[in-house]
Image (cartoon, rainbow, N blue to C red):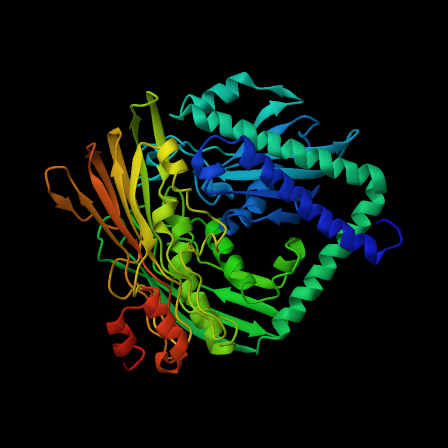
Length: 562
């Protein structure tokens, strides 16, 4: 234990310095990765950890990845023990040893000052391919993990600064796209940036002083988080929500049962009674479910809260093994991140019973579409996720309207849709239409966020389209609160060059989509909050003029006359 005197000013400086380091790591990835999933949509996260693997700070472009980095690092630390050296680099994605999704691959670099391990730098990003039966990483036909992806348990890919060529080649021999290898090199580069900056701090202040202040920072964050929880009234709420479809039966309802308990300065999430794991890929590993809990909980507290290990301490999560939110080996689990949608519904409804002024109404559940195939302009394979068209609206709160075109909840607004021109440059796609959808938002005194309507034409060859989502069945709309109404449902329609149409299921692999086929996708709006009749009349008239609300809906839902 260090006897270093604690300087509160230095604690604050270090917290902000850690944050700036993770942001610089993120900027490195934005400028060096090749896949539009990473450099356009920002589907990645960066983090700094101490020598024990405790979270010091992170930059959460994708929150559900961010809170899943620490369990992966713990697996690496436990597996390698003392066999960690300067210049080492580790890779991990395995959902049965701390990972959240197979396509979300983590890179960890230990940070040494001379011969002493003093911390870890980490980057995790969604890769354009990760092996398995379907290019792009999503396979609704999978019934076990080996049909989904290449499993990467804790593995050392650089040993004392030298790349282990045999291990490296083994991994990338099982991944289709060269882009993935290039992007994971960029992840290593992001970790090097984190290592460099962390060493500057340790050299300037000394390791003993640094860690004395880190301990103080984590304890102070815990204290601050407990103070936030005390502002939520004590009590318990038992709620249910449902995910729809298990990739076998599209009409099957999967029960999420949650008992939320707030007691003094602690919160407990208990999922006892949640439905069993499915035969299909609609399951989540524990890491993904815990991340969904954290990202929703942080929406209830001070947004300036430091994001480090201290904020995790007052929060307990119990998810029974073998339920579809904590599936056991060798279950298929690629859909797990998307289960944050129905899970967040349960969490928000439970918090609403205890602290109605802190929650939002329901967010639009994601209907994700992944596309892959052959790009004739460059004679290469390609894969992308249509983030542009899947982002619906968020739920309104007691004080504000929902955000338009923001979803997914598991990304909490961090993920971006592709730029309308860049998507045509990077992918064999032609964008015909992309606009807010009138009347998509749930009506309320505070309306939900607007959804969008998008039309895309496929210009590539050997195209495969994969739907993996929810929100298409009645009852799965973004729910309203306190008299607010639900948003609209998601929809997708394929129109082939011969005029034939197909409505893909919410979880389906559609092969052989020909050149010239059109996809029309609707991402629904968020739920409203409060009685629509109480909404400002002038605001409604403005939105009718802007085409946000139709005259018919203004009269029928909001009671606007004239």
